[in-house]
Length: 559
Image (cartoon, rainbow, N blue to C red; front, side, top):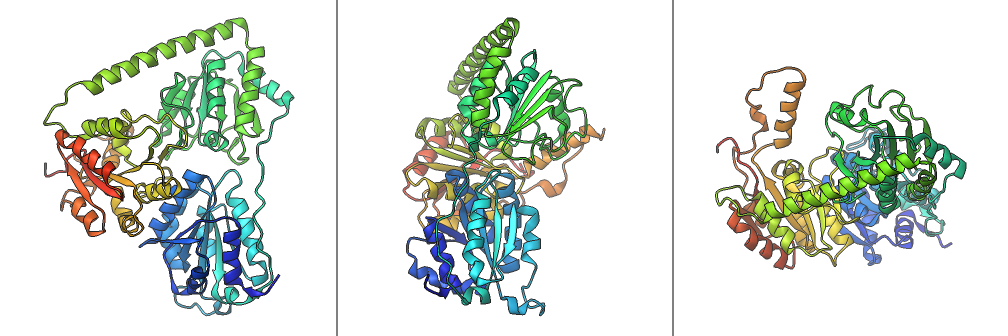
């Protein structure tokens, strides 16, 4: 192979792997390889005004494509700005390959300006973090990074690129990454053991997470639940792992307090966990999660997830899609006639209940609106009416999500992404990334007034590149989620209800989101009355480029 600077070889490697975009914010220590981008027209640099925006856009793109996505951050200060969003990417299993420059190996002992241990900084929020110390290992290291990011469980990795190493020559050949086939099937005998543990259940449940989505196992999960007669509860669920309109779908387990989850999990006499771990709340239950004697079977490609926090009777490291299909077959042969009849009757009742609920919701949706009401319901109705069926929704609406998605139910895999990990601000940049991944589809990103202000600079990027995502800021003039959570906290520790902390209020001064959006190059309108919803949605969808709607969903303290 012809010798050339490692900074050039690195870009050849990205080109060999078909990388389309590099999301980033440039800095001086990366200027060598960034300057070479002019020779690689197939690799487009998407400029963000802050590193959290760059990571958020890459997160949306990676989740929408399920392909490794490249992010460029600027040494220790830029990596520091992106850490919160990298945590989001790790919890959301976004396969990001983060490259961060630094001044050079020769300066290691100088404690120079901006110097930091980037690998140590990134280790808590990445699957793997490393540093190139020899230019002849640059491409080998990059290929490993791509492979690690794209091997279940997917997640972000970091490769640190010292400038002096990038300026030295390498003869490594740029060849495509060899990705792993993880569609493994479990041993039939082990599947039979799992079925025997579960077959006699009268109150079974499935706890499912995004490993179902990554495996493409939605149909297999639905069939398993129907065969077994089991409710499906979500945990670490931010994709469409099962349509919310399916009779078996029961809802999400608690995000904040484990006690809420335990009321569901401890009532089951058999539990199947698939594609997640037990259990990912902020304040998880420490014991008593499963009923005494209830068998627990866990299926995942993530070896760390199985029996992570609580013992299981049987763990299967295998592809959820193939394993759920085999387990459903095995249950059909091992369930007694009584249990098969119970499952059939349960499914019939659930289907009838769900049909009634959907019909009742439809009637409610068609009822006349109070003209003085806040416009959330009217807006959701209009959006549901005007959006094409294949629209993609990126949801960071948080407390507004239940009202919105009652009218926009997540039913179609790959067309709904929800924030995960607790890092605010992914809604706007995530929608931009999803739009770049699917330029032929309508993409709508939802966020809150508080969350939007973490990454509102992303609107500038959408305008610069004419990325036609639509953005909805659900504006209630407060950190409403904190208000809801503190009320639950008061109840849990027997504190009498009182006024919310003043620091949760965002209404003083009020943020003019339409003016802010327009200053960043994005047209915008405000919707604060139900009658404005239809025209606002039509204008947004009729605008070729990006568009923002400031949707008033509540009032701040001044109201």
